[in-house]
Image (cartoon, rainbow, N blue to C red):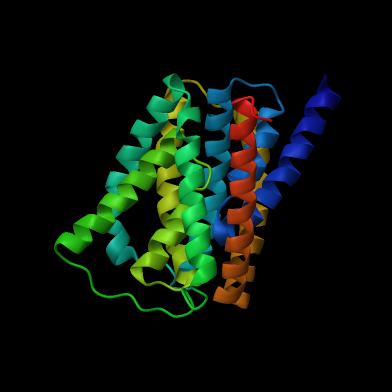
Length: 259
C-alpha cells in the first residue's frame, strides 16, 4: 500500500511539473494535471478541489516571477481581484452540485473563436498598446473578467487561455497578457479552493504532490517565457489552444455516444 501511494505521488509530482511549466506560460495546465488526478478514482468534485490546490501554487509562483519583472498591472487588477475572488467561490460552490458537462459545447465554440482570431491576426500581441480605460469601457472589461472567474470556479479548463485572450484584447503583448492572466488566475484558483476546502472536497496528499511539481514547472516556464519573449508565448498559446480544443471536442463526442 505504501509503495502504491509513493508511486502515485511520484506520477502526480512529475505531471504537476509539466502542467506548471505549460500553465505558467500560456495556461492549459489543467488539461494535464486534472486527468492525472482523476486516475486516482477520487470523486469528480474532489478531483476539482485537489487540482485547485495545486493550481494555486503553480499560478502563484508564475505570478510572483512575472510581477518581479514588472509584467503585472496591479493598478488595474486591484479593481477586479475582489470580484474575481467572490465570483470564483460562487462558481466552485455550484460545481459541487451541478455537473459542468452542459457547458462543454459553449467552451469548445469559444476556444475555436479564440484560436482562429489569434492565428489570423499574426501581429496581434506583438507590441504593448494598452489605452487608459475609464467609464463604460472599464466596467465592460471588469464584467468580462468576472464571467471568466465564474467559469474558472465552475469548470476551469481553458481559463488561463481565456484570460490571456482577454488581456490581448485590451492591448497587451503576449508576455504582459500572460503575466496579468497569472495574477487573476491565482485569485480565482484561491477563491475556488477555499470553497472546496470548506466542503471537504480536497485530497491534500495528492494535491501537495502535484503542487510541488507545479512550483518547479512554473518557475522554469515563467523564466523561459520572459527570456524568449512574446514570440514563444504566441506559439505555445496556439499549440495548447488547439490541444485543448481537440481534447474537449473528443470528450464531448464520447459522452454523447457519437464516437
